[in-house]
Every structure is written in C-alpha cells, then in structure tokens.
Amino acid sequence: MRRVLVTGSGRGIGKAIALQLAAAGFDIAVHCRSDRASAEAVVTQVRQLGKQAWLLQFDVANRAAAKAALEQDIAEHGAYYGVVCNAGITRDGAFPALTEADWDSVIHTNLDGFYNVLHPAVMPMIQLRSGGRIVTIASVSGIAGNRGQVNYSASKAGLIGATKALALELAKRKITVNCVAPGLIDTDMVQELVQEELMKMIPLRRAGTADEVAATVAFLFSEPAAYITRQVISVNGGLV
Ligand code: NDP
Image 1 (cartoon, rainbow, N blue to C red):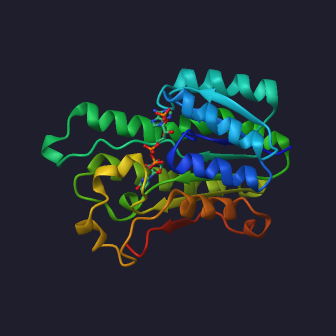
Image 2: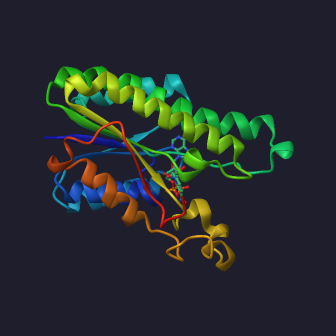
C-alpha cells in the first residue's frame, strides 16, 4: 500500500491530482479546509477506482492543527509514500493597496503551509525506507513575478527555494522533491481571469486544465521519473 497525501484535493487541480494518482494505483489521503462535501465526493471517487481513501480536514496555515491531524493520520494509517503540497490561495491587488491581511494570509497558506504539512510528514516517510515523492505546486508567478501578485509571487518563489533545498536533503533517502509550476489553469481560483484579452498573452491561446497539471504530477510519481529531483516543471502554454 502506497499512501499519498494531496492537500487541497476537494476541487480544482488537487482533485485532478488525487484522481490521477488513484488511477495510477496509489491510496489517497484527500484533504480540505472548508469544503468538506466536495472532498467527501473525491473520497468516494477514489474508492470507486478501487483504492483506499481517507479524509483529512485542517487549515494548512494553522501549524498546530496541521501537526495534530497529520500525526494522528500517520499513527492510524501509516506514513505517506508521497505528499503533494497543492493547497493555495491568492489575494491579489496592486502593491500599494495590498493589506497586511492580504500579505499574511497568502504567505501563511502558501509558504508556511509547506513547513506545516511536510515537517510532520517527512520523518515517517524516511523511516518507511521505501523512497518516495514530494511535489509542490508553485506558479509561473513564483518564477517570473506577476503584477498585482507581489504576495503570491513571493510565496511561490519561496516555495520553489524550499522545494529545491529539501530535494538535496532527501536525495540520499531516494525521495524525490520537485515543483510543478502551472500557468493559467481553468479552476475556481481564476474564474474571472479567463478572458479573451489574457488568452492572447498565452502562446497556446488558452487556459490549461487541471488534468494537464495533474498529468505532470502523476508522471513525477511514476517509476520512470525516479531520476528527476530538485526541478521546477512549468505547465503554462508557453507563458514563461
Ligand atoms: P482552487 O481555489 O480551485 O482550490 C484551492 C484548494 O486549496 C481547495 O481545495 C481549498 O480547500 C484548498 N485550500 C486553500 N486554502 C487552504 C488552507 N488554508 N488550508 C487547507 N486547504 C486550503 O485552486 P486551484 O486548484 O486553482 O489551485 C491549486 C494550486 O495550484 C494552488 O496552490 C495554486 O496557487 C496553484 N496554481 C493555480 C493556478 C491556476 O491558474 N488555477 C496557477 C498557478 C498555480 P477548500 O475547498 O476546502 O477551501
């Protein structure tokens, strides 16, 4: 049994990742913050694919809550073979208008979430002694920066640095650590952005799909991807 935790997997990109990894043979710890009904539906879909599924609910920005929930899940069901740090938020605005709350919530969720989720999960992964996979979901904003997203770009650039450093630490354990950086993907997060004007900036002239991001994550979880670590793979239609 190979268990994989996918944070924020009740909807959007995380849901697509959970279902593709289940189809590839992994058992899935589905995770949500608030939308429990959607996450329960994903648990059902994973089970319909013949794999085991569990539901975890906590705010990745809440260190104590994340630690308690993850330690309990690991104690009851065993260590994760893999973790996908997908949960994330945007609070966009031109920098002068960015509030302290906009800054703090994005950094706490997108960057602190890396520590809050992976710190309780990594030592049990190492002790499993079966290698493993960690994938973080960053963004083209973390690679190139994006106007109106100073907070989000900072959080995702930090996530990329953390991912590369952790890859170095875990390489001798045969745990690969990579980052997938999506461009504009058609999910709830960007509903109001998917407009014709913006499409003209994307060489492939369309938004990507959650399944297209998930396919890259699923590849990183496959055996042929075992030699790929410390990389950022961007799925962005040629945007950057
Ligand atoms: P959605 O808004 O569709 O879904 C976000 C998911 O993250 C939800 O499952 C949500 O849970 C969860 N989540 C948000 N905040 C928290 C929190 N504090 N604690 C726990 N879970 C939380 O987003 P996408 O699917 O579009 O995005 C997924 C990832 O991909 C994010 O990291 C995002 O930054 C990144 N990304 C997305 C792009 C896009 O164009 N869509 C582009 C580049 C990167 P719940 O439903 O329970 O609230």
